[in-house]
Length: 326
Image 1: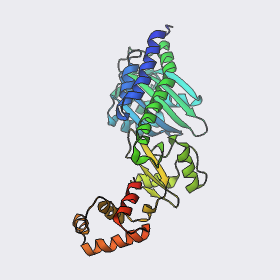
Image 2: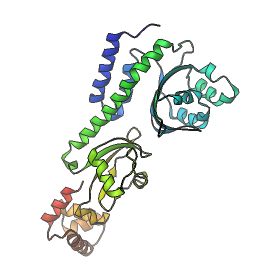
Image 3: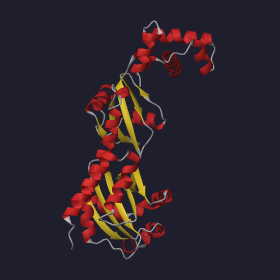
């Protein structure tokens, strides 16, 4: 077996971490894969997270590299035959290589065999890490289209050594994005977390965890409460008794979630918030009425309700409340 060149390996790892700090969230994984190719050639990749189930992996987030969405749809139909993924579940960490025509030769693997032939997954490397308590999996799969480009022991060992750095650099890239949000003065009141659309938390501030505890008691520390997940699925913020929680639109299969304690302005309805924002920006009652297609009298009445809810007497005080909101 030929061992990886240590100098080349060290340089590659440095490039991964440099890219983690420099690349935007939506570009990092493709950049990381292009870096890996310098030492470990491949043609296609799947890189994601999932929960291991008896019916195959239940994907939470996925990054496809040179793969069509159609491949993923095909995979969902035949994943129960994926003995490559199943072979990785016996250990907390595993890095394995396979030759697809042999691995999926049996009658019971005809679906996976068809997938590999159609989408040119002739040779594959898989590296995974699984939490035995939750069956939550992080993995990366690399595929070669050429049947003769066998993934040998050197390739397997190289991915085994690289995989922890690949996953750590991905975490750092997400945290860099989170730091950008934290640095925005508009979000000074907020605590932050990164979670997937199923509610699994990847990163969270200590303050974020404390806010969830205040509202929900002692939720599972690795998951968002189901009520939050339901609100985010409906693209609605959560306004609780003690906190307000909002989520971004999914980016790379992830939600960037921010939470803060309730403020007086949270007593307002959505329409009242619209009126408050327009008034705080300097609009007159007539201008607000025209903007919202309401009568000036209705806007004046709503304004009085807003003042009563906030315990204020004028637009200057209203502007302070609006600025405190996000």
